[in-house]
Length: 225
Image 1 (tube, helix red, strand yellow):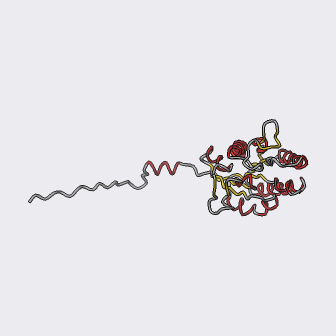
Image 2 (image 1 turned 135 degrees about the horizontal axis):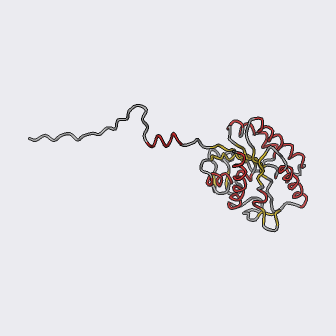
């Protein structure tokens, strides 16, 4: 009876120190650039998205309803950590700054805060004092800051809009931050004190968050140089 030869088994042998093309590709890829997005509902993605801090571990809802999503879509090399919590004032955001920013050792941080302070009747000085403390903490840790302006909400009074504009002008004048005019990005044409598009009159639509990302992204590119 004729015996059949066993099938040959091919084994790839690589000399020590020789990398496959896939390994070379992985080794040549730069590490992702980590960015922290810190703020209130306008960072979290309200009303259609809950941030990972609000709905652990990864957040929930419509991913496109957060500016972090649009930043990463436009810049695949960035990893943007959404650290927004709906309803928080600037002092409450500052209270978790070390946990949410410093401990993540980001290449940059985006800070948008103050709208809830204004809504609750807090003074311009209260907001600017808390923002200054966060800017200074970032500078001490060597973390560049992108500072976004407070965006409008459609039910704001004339006095509330005046205070928001005063805070925003103060932010614009700070030399240690890269300013992103997120208020202008989402303001209605001809009426910048109202959102150009909103599902609830208080927060941007997904397209509004996309516009915020466009403004923030340009400032981040300057801050990361």
